[in-house]
Image (cartoon, rainbow, N blue to C red; front, side, top):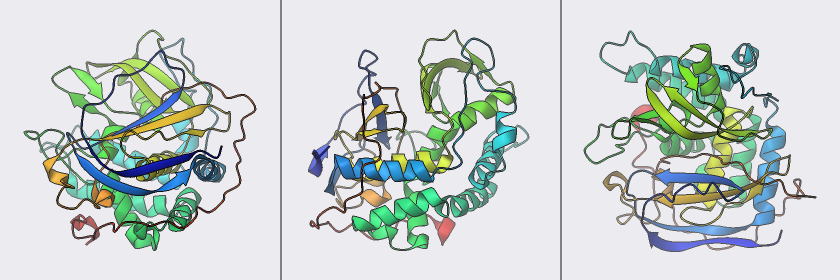
Length: 345
């Protein structure tokens, strides 16, 4: 695994590629904002080194659960799944955020002030997990400026996951990568669920009796699955998620792919069961985050979506590649922090 993945400076735009159901591999696709054109330049990293980082994050994810999903009944998850898992600090804070989004008593819509408080509490726990401590340490090896201290790192994670933006130029301010991936959104034009790629959220909705699974059309592996369902009258023909992994692992891996392999570069790694993963990032144009004015502002650009798709199992894979620091190469200026949300002051 000595192949080099090089992400060089480029300008690219386009629409999200269609799902390739016939291809048997793991794909993680990121859409950054809406119609975003990006000029990016990130240092190279070898496939071996990337795999080593993923393996170290996986080993640090001691909160991971081994769940056996039941795809033949109305209940997908084992009984009391969340009861056994909700005492984990990041999960506890995540569930508190879920409750804000699902508060039916909120007459004036989402309580943004309370949400900001809960997000800050969640981030506090998140960046202090073993998984995120390792992620920050690894990013330091590649001279990522925001990894130098916890405060800057927290702001960076907030920027790409929680910074609010419009999905459409005529839409409302309020969407975010976190909301799209961990909460789910409604596409009024297609009457479908948009996003929602987190197993904890699915389990939460299942316990509330809010989700109805369709006859099984997907596939399941030990740590990843696809499902078809209806939620609040809206359908999701194809939804994918990691299974049993912690919020910190999912956000760390997605962040890692986003940083090192944006655009059409392939982000490849294996899970411990040797399931292969490929990742594609595709920045699109959004006037809120116009990097033509600041081509090195990737740290400020939020994700639009991130999700896994099941892939083949690689025989005799070497999951635990030894980490070898990358050779020093030129790293571009990453811009400043003038656009940081006021949540962190």
